[in-house]
Length: 121
Image 1 (spheres, helix red, strand yellow):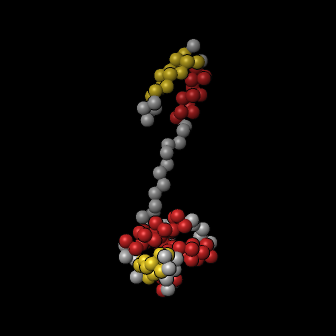
Image 2: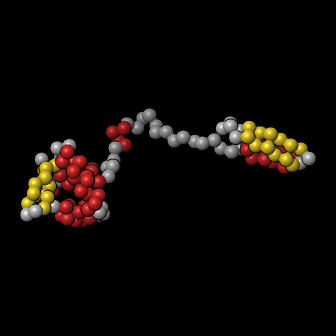
Image 3: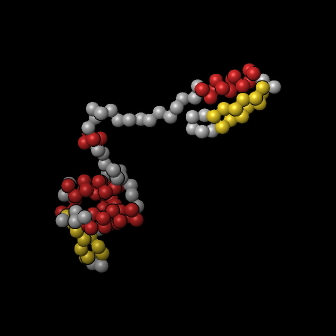
């Protein structure tokens, strides 16, 4: 019976007990494993072309650009408008996004009839 001690490139130590054919098959299998392939973006693609909407914040900004917030809108109206555009988000996700946009001075907030409404700033 033959014995082989192998150390891989990542530092893993392998000890094999078996006949010469078994050891040869295992060594061949280890050597033929493909290394991790990293995907890179070709240099000729500019970053500006790669920008896409990253999520709810960008969708709300799009609503603002379309004039949706020209008149005050409450959370339910915003949720319904997003849903009309096939963007389904719970109110619990929409509200923090609106608060961030208010803090960044992209939207304004007013209190009407004991409800917060959001307007273009």
